[in-house]
Length: 132
Image (tube, rainbow, N blue to C red):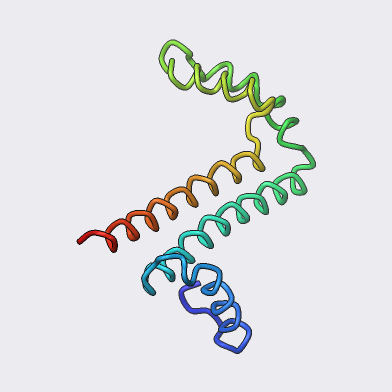
């Protein structure tokens, strides 16, 4: 939120979040940026989950049912020779996940990459501080 409702609970929440990254080797502005990054990622995934849930309630169809119903259309418009990379990767992902999309796996994978990036930042910061 660019303009959050200001009050003691919002400030308490921000302080609690900052304490989670305080003392790990980040500058103050980096601490704020790390929070923005992680909370933005989690918020985006949460919005996607809510939208998927709403779509299922609105249509009465699960994702699997939707994909099954739309498979004939996909077969008509998808040309594996024209889009060989999409054909290869889509088939591999579908086989591995046993679904067109695995939200829990996608969340975990993405969060791990975000945290890996933060870890790299902390290591770089630490190495920079140790240089003579």
